[in-house]
Length: 70
Image (cartoon, rainbow, N blue to C red; front, side, top):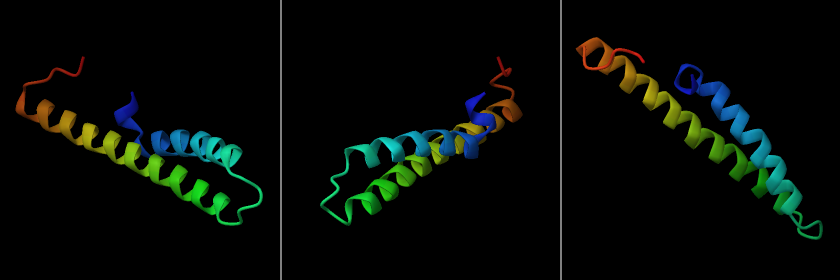
């Protein structure tokens, strides 16, 4: 199910992690919220691309007849 929606996976991961990193950021440092948003989006991008590559792998295995989709 995850491989079917790689963009949704990226968003569902990046939003909570961004909020988590924002909670951990210090208020006296002005750059901390920027880094929190950057790293949250970066983590979402990495996991979204991982889901996309899994989707492409499953499609290739199905096309070759190695994987039955279960």
